[in-house]
Length: 120
Image (cartoon, rainbow, N blue to C red; front, side, top):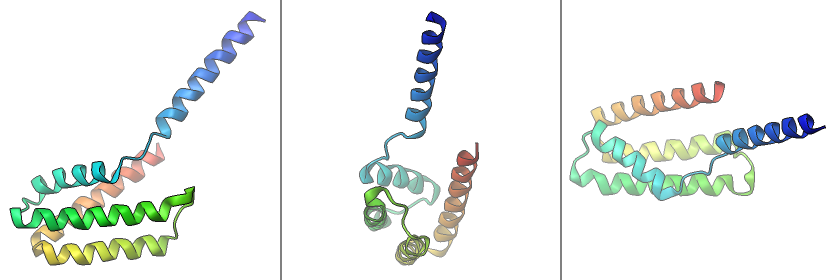
C-alpha cells in the first residue's frame, strides 16, 4: 500500500512538472518587443531613426495578435497571415531593402526553430 502511494505521488509530481514546463506563461507585449528589438538592433544594424518606428510596428502587431488569441481559441490562419503581411508592409517602409531581406531570413529561421521545438 505504501509503495502505491509513493508511486502515485511520484507520478503526480512528474506530471505537474511537465505540465508547468510546457504551459509556461506567455511573455507580455513589452517583453516580446524588447526581445525582438534587441535582436533586430544587432542583426539589422538599425539606425537611430529606425528604432522607434520599428518598435511601434512590433508593439501594435503583438497587441493585435494577443487580441486575436483572447478566449483561448486559435485565430484563423488567414487573419494571422493578413496581420503578418500588414506588419511586413509597414517594415518595408522603415527598413532598407537589405535590412528587410535580413529580417525575413531571421524570421524564417526563428519559425523553423519554433517548429523543431514543437516536434520534440
